[in-house]
Length: 322
Ligand code: UDP
Ligand code: MG
Image (tube, rainbow, N blue to C red):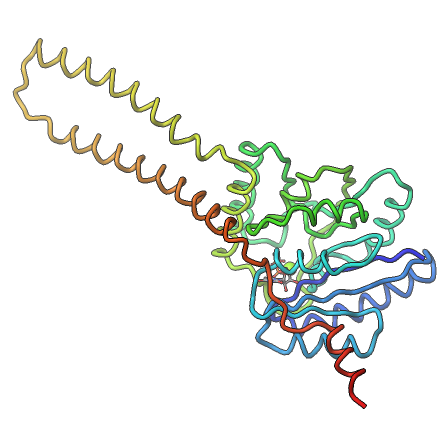
């Protein structure tokens, strides 16, 4: 029998975990019966400060299909997904948010499409940005516009991390062991044929969003710098542009001085040019700085996550006891 592994990153989700589990049990039972497939749920506790880990322990004891990994601190959703992918043993693997914003009802169709062998991945995509704040959806659209213009890897707008992948594709994703992870780009970069399923936005089942604007901005910088080096060449393009402008300006100023003299000392124009050029220089140095810092972190080869506890260890500990 084939196995589907589901990875569920959780950060302070004590309210959502039981609701998610109850919904999934119904979905899993139905698929086990109709499609003859078995499941493995891997909860990843991303350093939660609430009782998420407690909920996971409870589920692992109650249901053989549930396992968990717990991080020593908050490493971010990307790290949680990577840890889950490494731990997954299934023939097919997917990542799901615990807040039920990724509808479990899509799973039977995803699995059926993969089984037919026409694709290696079936991914979910939100059909609209309804239910999202105006600022957030404007920034998201701007981000996808910029990144797709700059990067050769296509990064689909509205795509979720919710996608059922074949073992071949999962192994390819695991080959990419970079520290600054941006999965939406990684999934595109590894290739393989992906089919898309559209679905309507749903509100969170419990708790609040764990992605404040600040985190989203850092995430988009990770995305752009991880999948494009175009900003680095911006400095040289601006350099050429400013050289040309200054040549024209010099000819104009010399000509004017020769013809009409220089009755007023031209400090305002000088000041403007000085501000402008130093601003551009700082901006470009900043871009180089961002890439440099990412390279610096990458060369340290630090682990992407650190484990504090796993369900396997707990099971072992229990079995040792008399
Ligand atoms: N998440 C995580 N680590 C983090 C932030 C979020 O594991 O540092 C998880 C979170 O528990 C949830 C998923 O990632 O299961 C998506 O987060 P959320 O629903 O808050 O994002 P949104 O849907 O608002 O974009
Ligand atoms: Mg959510």
